[in-house]
Amino acid sequence: MVARHIIVHIDATRADSQVRRQLFSTNREGFKDGPVLTSLTQHLEKMIEEDEVLAEIERELTDKLAQRESKSTNEEVRRQVQRLLLEAGLQVRQEGPSNVAGGSETRTTSEKRKGRHRKATPLPTLPYPQVTKFSIVTPRPKMSVRIGDNETVLVETDADSRFDQEGRVAIKTEPNCLEQAGMVPLRGGRVRWRLRPRPTAKADDMGKIVVSITKPDGDQLRDEIDFEVLPAREEKTKKAKGFVPPFEIIPNNPTDDAEVWTTVWPDLGEGALADVQTGVAYKPLPIGGGNTVYYSTIFAPFHEQVEKLTSESPGLSQLFRTQYEIWIAYHAILQENSRAETATASDEQETVEVALEAERTRVARMQVRQARETAQLMHKAIRDQSE
Image 1 (tube, one colour):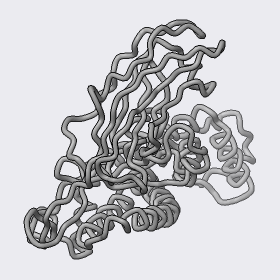
Image 2: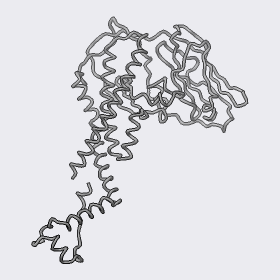
Image 3: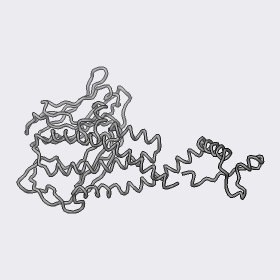
Image 4: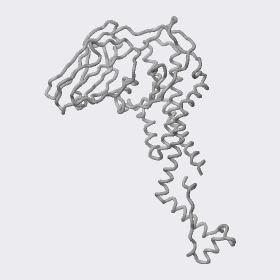
């Protein structure tokens, strides 16, 4: 890259006559091949290679060009995924197979939720171990949860997050009809749990949800609400011609946005082992009439590769991420489309989801290697074209 902008001047005024004869041609239009030119070239190469300022300029020029190429590539990600889907036999923005309301078949569906998650302003808290309130604010006055679905319990408090870190925050149901599907730890005066009916739960089961926080001296603050288990939501469906939904590709991790993380992977929230959390790669979710592909930035092979490539070149790392997004989105949408076309009994859905998750992990490991090799080739091509 620097070679396009650099000229080396050699001052030979102090060279003796013998060196000049061995270096310059008679007409002074070129150099003579020989030991003087060879030695001079070797010294120049060493000087340029060891020059830290030139090395930094080289990195900056390469990264700027790679980032510009990556930005252009990011704008093409959607079109590239759509092109791949077309080649796979899908019809993007055209009629294609899908399930629509009506018909003789049935399927279990989740409650359709409106709106988008917004980060709430942190509440004021007291120094540990002071606490004066621990109250359920959502849902009120009771929680209704359907079989095969889950609901959120939101508690607001003035307790410090240390209570949660020490295991002093708890939730239980009486009778034990519900189980924890995920948790967002106590932070900024709020703690959330996602609860779902146990496999043994039946429609019309009723009871109480009890939340508590325990002080170091053993005293507790408690709050409770009633709950009711409702039948699974089912809708009539039939095979029909529809439109392939739009899609988004969004990175996520349990630290930056824990609530979204537990929505995507309900079983891998607070309390899950780190090795388990870093073992999932990506997952498509049907949201707002489209598919949103969430991918984990802590997925071990992906995270290791990003760390390595970033240390080498930020531009190379961005090219890698772009290639990875294209291929996992392609596979995720194909996978979701295939599942939508296949009717699955409600008691088989959990087994199917485990198999799909394992398949996504295998594909992601392969795509990490493929994206790395593609990014390196693109990065090299960018440099070669600039020379």
